[in-house]
Length: 118
Image (cartoon, rainbow, N blue to C red):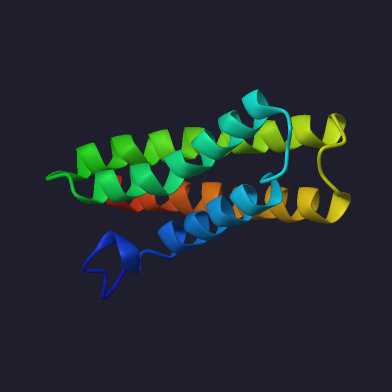
């Protein structure tokens, strides 16, 4: 985490923002408004909690928000599984989202582990 002066410098924040934009665009025309709202809110929660945690004063507080972001990432994965079962998404986007959410979750875990050790 060298040269990180703001949350926008964090690769995990950038990746989660890209995921959020992709999900918003993909489900733009989805008529299941309850589903669409849920997956969008869960996606937005990931980078938002990373940013909020970064702005906190202590590592303990930062880690708490990283845990929340990780939980939201798991929620997005669940919504992606549901979208696949409901045939709302194509296989290519399904696989992409699963891979990205897995990567984000691992990055968050490693950040938590690192920050907890300071």
